[in-house]
Image 1 (cartoon, rainbow, N blue to C red):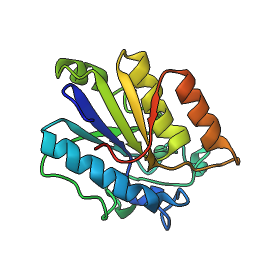
Image 2 (image 1 turned 90 degrees about the vertical axis):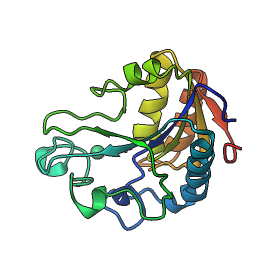
Image 3 (image 1 turned 60 degrees about the vertical axis):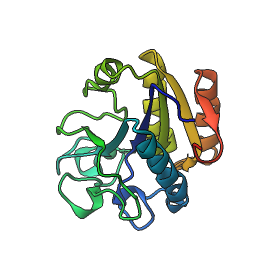
Length: 189
Ligand code: VGL
Ligand code: ZN
């Protein structure tokens, strides 16, 4: 891997989701080597790379101040919303931003973005997924990829769980497997 008609989807590798950020995933740094390897391999193969970002207005409905479940995070234009500096981003990649308006929450990169049509237009058949956080945006991206008719492979070493409740990560993996998502260990080479 990868092969023709694959695309790489790196979900929300943003400062706020790493340790020290506003909504940190413990051990988030552990994903960096696998994500960078995936970026390198897809870039060298000339295959599409999509990096997504949670891109909220300051009054987003998911924030506790608005009655939502999360602390303020990934406010568009702030340092916490930047891609993590340890990411080795190639010269060419596409950015998808989501949950950009106050009233709409979107964990999935396919929700309200038109990404599925863009990928179909590029003749993509399989989506290789990594990033943060496993139970939320990575889960939603994998499930929606399958629903949209793509194959989906999750790079297990390139993702980590928030674990709001212990065991959430493992339960998510089971759910993804049952939905037809392939789980792959190690970097994509
Ligand atoms: C995410 C919680 C809130 C994620 C985004 O990227 O997984 N999680 N917003
Ligand atoms: Zn968010």
